[in-house]
Image (cartoon, rainbow, N blue to C red):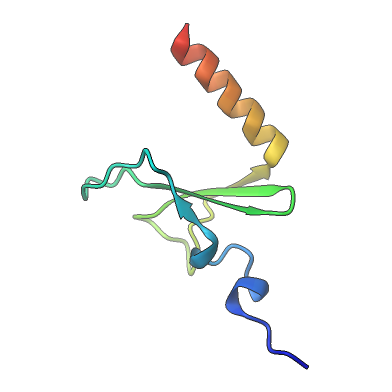
Amino acid sequence: MSEMSDRELNPWARSRFRKSARSDSTSNGQCVAVAVWGIEVAVGDTKSPVADSFAHLRVSSSDLAGLLATIKAETSA
């Protein structure tokens, strides 16, 4: 029997999150991270972790795609 890794036990572990390339590299707190697990996406603030995770908001990938499309459309109008 193999041991499960932290990533398998906690799909929202910090090690799964990837920081946005558009996040501010200074220490002013504007750091966004995203993780994907199946059809779910978790978004969080790397400066304010929740336990061993950054998962502040969890949505389906299609809902997140719709939100991002709407934001892009509004900001380019």
